[in-house]
Image (cartoon, helix red, strand yellow):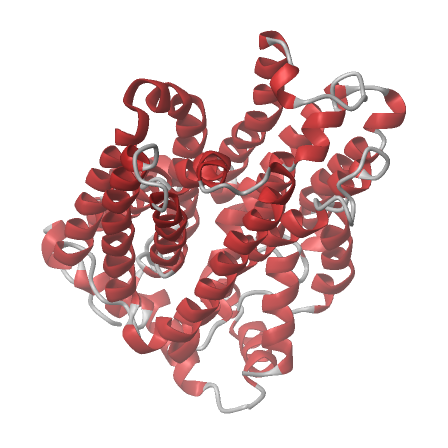
Length: 476
């Protein structure tokens, strides 16, 4: 662990995936929704149906932009590289971060312009930026990390999302920026991390793997690796990269369509798509949708429900930190399967407590405990983003990232649209649906997903050779 490596990780995630979490949570705060309509203080419950639909569109347009950005990841990575270094010269980094900065300016000035449309456009641009970030950042972190701590550093991306959510919850408190006068600053804060990233990233090295394998520049790869490792003894890693390059010497970097047709990565693609699907559909968003209802049933006053949400966000961050510490000790498989299993158990408890909360006075406390327990399970399994970077060779990794992130954002959007109808039709029994998702995901991980801890990218790829019914590549 060296200073350049730590700096690269912190600046990359804080300027990218941090904003993903921040912009998910910030519009759920009372201030923006209370003040965006006619820019006067109103209660959300007094909004007309048309205004509620408009606000729902304002929130969900973020995921539409995310789908576009995530599916564009493969193109940007193939054309410009892994997000840093010389990218500033070609303008890719500037364009990417400019989406965030322009969005921040639009939201920060929306009140003065009396324009909700500016917020809608801003959230669409921020969604594209976040979609690119969730695809590119795990790739970059996976490629610059030493093998022994690749899992831990990979989880930093998920950790920064939870920190972004918690930051939005804290800044949304009425004692900070959650007021009629300051809410534009609350929304515009998202531009600050982008500005920080633009100032620092141009001075950090490009991905050594990208330089050697994709661009055949071993000299630059060696320099980048020496800087990241803090030692000139990088021969082992250079040799491993050469082996991977030789194994795919006749293969150019693949497009999304080519990866989908490639039999040698068929089960990797199925696994990534499935895990990203279950991460969204396991019920984590439903838990957050239910927060206010659960807190209200537990007797938490309306004025203090925001503080309770901050408490939930704090648990989320804390448990993600724990997963960082455990990732390279216990491995990916046990955390992912165990996390889904824990979440499934608390789906059962949640269903029972919500059904009985009108009959037993103290049962609402069990509902709160169920929320915390579910979040613990979910936070312990931030593995999908790591697996997206680990299960593929260099030639197919960017396109696979596009597919995985695209699936994640697509079902994020789908659940946001469908969940209110599920909640209305199924009531508290909606969590039985999420229980089924968690159970299926647990079984799939146990049966199909191999343990990737401590393995090289080529070794991981070879684990799928038999299942994909292809020949193991020969080393030259």
